[in-house]
Image: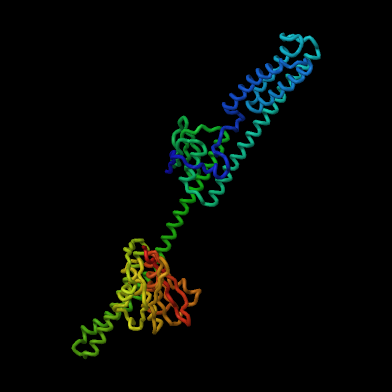
Length: 468
């Protein structure tokens, strides 16, 4: 369930998007606001009194009657524009009586001496009422057209936001609260019981949009229904996204488990078989073996154990990365110390040349694991490996350079995928580079493969540098 209640002052989104308040008003029924009615009646009363007071002092009776007729008709039209039909009709009728009383002989009575004056008075009254009604109708149609344009703009904005995916459900509920002036808006799955001052609108897929404290007319309800539909669409979209994410995670987990089983069934069996064979030979034929043979068997066992240790460490590291439990503890660390720790006990370390290295802000244990994986991969393909580094502002670059066969640009992204081995050859489960990239990114760095000038492959680590 999502619920949005009033918050502090904030910019109304519709005002920002459409140039007006954005709050849908009750204009669909053609009713004018109380404020406009009050202004209309006030204008009729004050205008009639002021015009009468002004015109009674005009010297010429002929011009006075013509001028009074025009001005009273104009006043009725103006009242119709401001206050609508009934203030205008009242102004027209009262204006006709004032014309008769003050300007048509005999003066100061409601009698009409001339038939022509009577017809003129009747025509004035009918014309004033008719014009007032037309003006009032036009004003109402304009107000309704304006309200329709506002509603269309609101619906168009909703469509843009939903299609563009810019809003989440809580933000759209907040927009609905602002638009309809509700105390609170919530999205529920079970339809609530109806109560006074509460509007319940279907939101699709078994959801209901509940607006508390909102008094809405027919046209406002149609816009509220559109809001509810869009909220329902967003909710369904979020649910589909969650289901898609869950399916992707399940698929990724299945792929990982399948690859892991394949790795365990093949790659881990080789060193295990070597250990078992060497152990059985020592147990069965130890008394027949010479020192050289016994030494060779122990070396084979040591090599198998080292391979097993590397594979298991890679598997554990990959599992930690996929479950998000890696928590680096970063500090200012000289990279030279990290590289020396990574090379200690590493096969082929004597073929690695280390240049002058800067200081980085990293987790030394995690970075040592990264460098060990990169160097172990490099010495497998190259007789000469270099570890170089430089600093540029707040970033540090560490390069592991080999001069082996290299990797084609189109294949460089694939070598960082789990359980992938370049050329599908070699030993191990194919996790070394995937683990190296994951541990690097966990420390706020990046790991990319580039071509070594003259041939070979260079692994480029971009790491956080000086934090001062």
